[in-house]
Image (tube, rainbow, N blue to C red; front, side, top):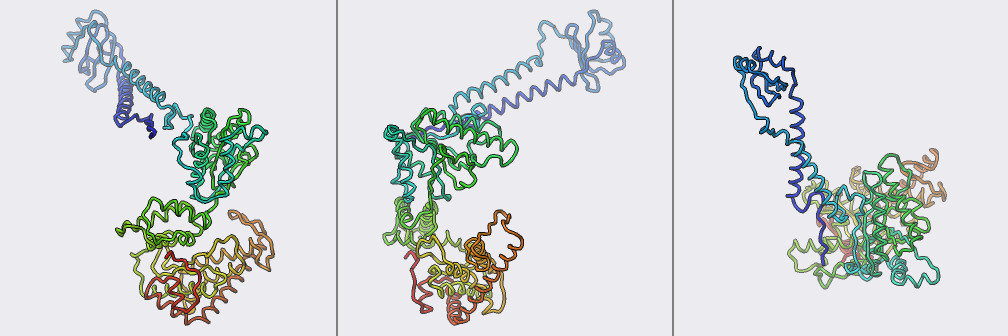
Amino acid sequence: MKKRKTPNPFFGNSAKSLLIVIIFVIGSFFILNRLVERSRSIETIPYSTFLDKVEQGQVRDVYFNGQDAGGSLKTGQLFETVVPHERDKDFDMLRHNGVKIVLANPTNQFSFWYLLPILSLLMTGAFVWYYMRQSRNSNGGGGPNFFSMGKSRAKLFMPSTIKDTFASFAGAQEAKEELEDLVDFLRNPEKYKRLGAKITRGVLLVGAPGNGKTLLARAVAGEANCPFFSISGSDFVEVFVGVGASRVRDLFVQARKHAPCIVFIDEIDAVGRQRGSGLGGGHDEREQTLNQLLTEMDGFEVTGESVIVLAATNRPDVLDSALLRPGRFDRRVDVPYPDLKSREQILKVHTKPVKMSSDVDLQKIARGTPGFSGAELANLINEAAIIASKNNAKEITIDDMEAARDKLLLGKELKSIALSEDDRRVTSYHESGHALINLLLPEDTDPLHKLTIIPRGKALGVTHSMPEREKYTSSKSEMEANVMVALGGRVAEELIFNKLYTGAYSDFTKATAIVRDMVCRYGMSEKMGTVVYSQHRNEFEYSEHTGRLIDEEVRAILEGLYGRTKQLLVDNQDKLEKLATVLLEKETLYAREVYELLEIKPRAEHSFS
């Protein structure tokens, strides 16, 4: 059964309630404003002064209500005064000076202005009653209610509503094995308590965005068949100091009532950052919230409740050390990017609801998508479905998958950019230089996938290669080969046109970064030795003299690799000319076409077909 949505306690169930509230507020302000204006505009004067103004012809009208009198001057000024009992002669003077006279019966006179304070109080009381009533009826629904600001905003999912299990989470086998201990404890707590074992109370899921940390937490709750509280770290923090701590207390009160259960805090780095990093109310609020969270997690030891806290983050380095000590989040489970086998399993999950052609090989797709997260693989399938739908196709084909991958990896084709013939020729030789160096260094580079001079993203052309296997380390020769491939475009331009163009900027950025890592991080420079030269946020952990030596070494290595790249293209200039000419004609070439054109032995095929 679908859970009914709780009405917003500020605005009721419809715009009609909002309109009523607005009328109340405007009406109250209007009445109070009229009262203040009227009280400020009436001048109290002595009766003798009143008579003088009559004789001077300054009074326009006057009313009498018993001994109270009031009226207005010809200037518009209002006045009031008190008159004696006998005033017959005064009436003659008033008539003589043309003053309008109004007499009222004191027993029947009732001024509307007497009602204004009462109406104002009634409206204010109705306004307060309305919000108090909404507060009582909101049941802590998480809306922006002032009276329930300290209530937890966590969403509670009962076991019957949780459909995710470990079977629905493809990949991350090691992470699932780590979490099976928690599932077993929630199912059979006595199995552990009989020997005095204490199960981990807090588990930190660490991984890059899109790798399924939230889904994995739901899968744990589904396997354990227990209630599941879900909340984001940012939901605790408010501008008012103390509100976040109150929400933490309320969350764990609810969790203990539903024990055994799981509390999942997504993006915990929003509230769990290192304390003492700043001053001011915002930092005070966050630190109080964190202190309360630490206290509540310690409280499990006393109460003995079977409440397990799962938290997810992609920034474990910024978390407070008190959160990571034993007894709190003392178990860390890494949720990595999926490997080849995991990617194939994830693709099988996401292709179930779509119509896929029978000739689509998911293993080839998995092999051609290294470094993709689970979310990116899901997006790949969705993009292919969108492309097939726009073409009015009955099912998703290999060509749709290829187009979707190119769009995600290389960017959308920019058909609106009209390059001149000279620009197309320069781009053709530039991309051919990249591709040819890749082909001439087969042992240390990834296999070529495709090259194109159709503008994509921010580039006028793209040369793309795909890894033939999962890589976890790189050798010095592989890093040097990658630098040479990056420099191949500029070398080809210089060799053919004897000019320097701006299109190589991103290539130089990539090449410089690789060489600097070789020198500063991986000990691949004989001159600088096996020392790590660290740099954090423009703060250098080495001297200025050492910095100059590093810059000189980086430049020397880049110049040496530039020379090697130039020699390779000079020795194979005929192949460069042939490749650039055909690319200029066809605009896009796949690896198999390039191998056939240059009569080079084919390497691993990374087309989906």
